[in-house]
Image (spheres, rainbow, N blue to C red):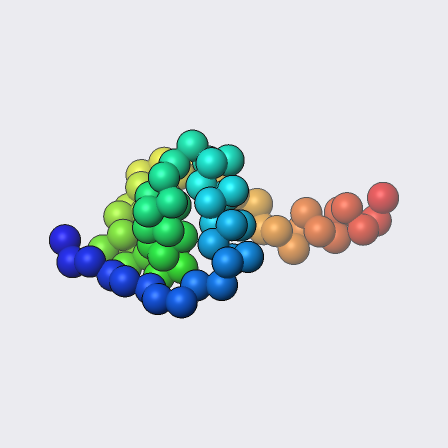
Length: 76
C-alpha cells in the first residue's frame, strides 16, 4: 500500500485530530486513514455491492407510495 505524507499541519488541527483518534480508540494514522476513506466516498464496486445487499434484503416486499403516507400525515 502506498504512503501519503502531509506536511505543515496546523498545530490546532493536529491536536483536534489526536483528540478525535483517542475518542475513537485509534491511532492518529488509523484515524486519518478512516477520514480519508470516508471523504473519498464509495467506489463503483462498493456501491454495486451495497445495492445488491439492499435488493436481497427487500426482495419480495411491497411498499406503499410515500406520497400517500405524507398526505395521510398532513390530514391529521
